[in-house]
Length: 212
Length: 185
Image (cartoon, rainbow over all chains, first blue to last red; front, side, top):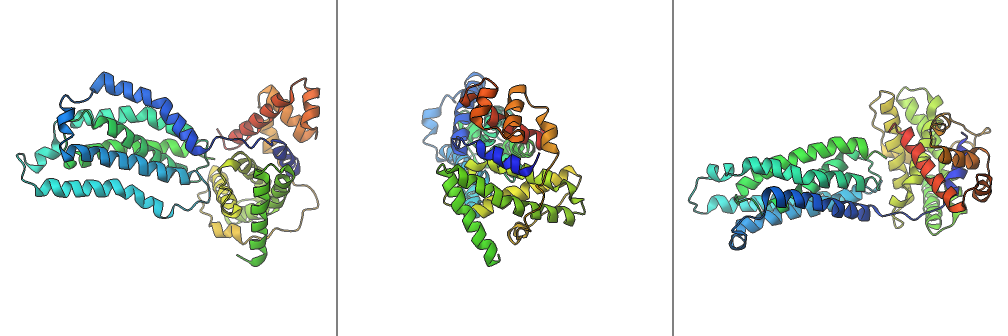
């Protein structure tokens, strides 16, 4: 085909209405959320002492860390879907959850505790944590990749990895309501392993499905 | 960036802003204006990677399709150049990878390319035609009618006994399937 003919044909396709990438991502996440919530409610559920646990700052910190991860990942993945948009300072947002966790660990280690730091790190829910976060995150990851296909990721593996962080952060936020291990040491160890796995899966999937 | 190129790129931004506002002629002009720049750059990229330049027009057409299908990701307050060059660079690297090369192309290499002389013969490529044959029937007929036979949307609708809306939908889907086939999905 002649390039001039192709150009004329492209110009004839004159409908400019299109869903914004952010909206497509949101719709996809809303569509997949019930699946993740169903997994949570059927297999895990909220821990029995949820109400009293909210008075424990370490319990609350878990939500702050995981939500900060999810939100910063969304704020990073959207400019990554716009070609030629420099990420700039936004990339640093991903350090917010890391910083929150670091502060939490510092407090955890400096306070007198009834258990050793290694016992708090190992916890008693590591296996559940390692399977629950990825299981709840996977539907969100698949959905977010579908939503992000609406954008144009010029670094598809990176976009996929950040989508993995986002879905891991969202799933971990819900999982935190079940888990009775509240030490930031536990979060930094086991949550991170699960979310790192999702990030790797996201990167591998992204490099295939997000190419423009 | 040389002054002439900077001027040209800001003209592209204005054309794209008009295009977003619904000026189809501006969009047509914009695509015609960027094609020679994309061609020159692609040829240079291929030459640098030690690849024959005879497939450059396939890559140019692939870039143009991607630009078209992803035009909604352009931020109308941003300059058009960086957006275009990011897509072009991405597509060129992809094309080189498919040829077994791992090459990194600097965005600046795009920015300082001056368009060559307007070619005497219209450049043509094969890949789009090959994939066109594999499209679903309705999409293929519509794309062929408009692209190859130069028939308008209105006449295509009459010719294929379809509504104009259905022709537009089939055209857009056909272009999207072509782009997907070109990238090897």
